[in-house]
Image (cartoon, rainbow, N blue to C red; front, side, top):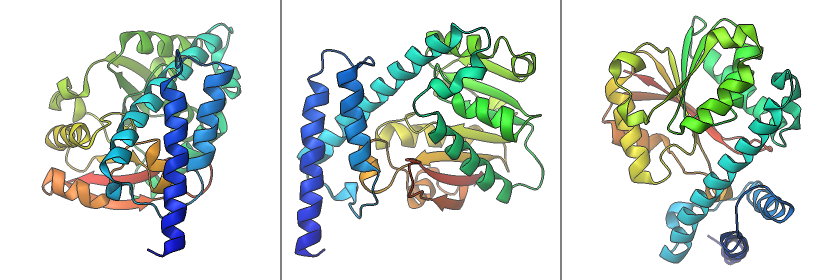
Length: 282
């Protein structure tokens, strides 16, 4: 690494540190003008392509990153919960999804994931599980209404209140109400009988925030998913890894001891923050 690159990396880390301190000192992470502004600054700081490798961060910066990811996860959940309540106040909630500030991002991410999915399947999947769907299950809704219009979607979240809010969003749509279920469960307690019913399993980026937690989830899925089923993982690269946990292709091979075959990894460079990794259960 050149001196200039090292200086740029140090500057980036310091800016992230400054925003972390401001965010951690907020009285609440619920949506507000101040909270929204700080997280917007953080996202704009982390989106541009960066060669930074977060696995090489010194311990103080690495520890800060771990805490920041958890703060981002909490804030994301509160933001989605706020908008799920707002959308549910309309007679037809799905007609107003554009009110969510990151709706266009989800449209692009869902299109990307569907495009990647079609390159690794010969038939359209009929049963899809989404682990960590949350109160505003935009990926499932967008895939179900725009791309996989005959598939059934089984959404899992550990939070019963989040599932109740999500279910209210699709209640007014007869088609989605028939094709979409919401189950309150820890993924580690969802066994093979359920998981083997699905052609594709999506794993939300914030399910398993630390490397150890993510490893446990992946090993569980590796033991219980159907042979031949696809696993869609969300990850992050570069400075975007200050926002979300990282899953590398090599990690999957190590963690699952050959249980999955990594098919492809895609790293967006536009406003879509998450990388996408696809693996097939052997």
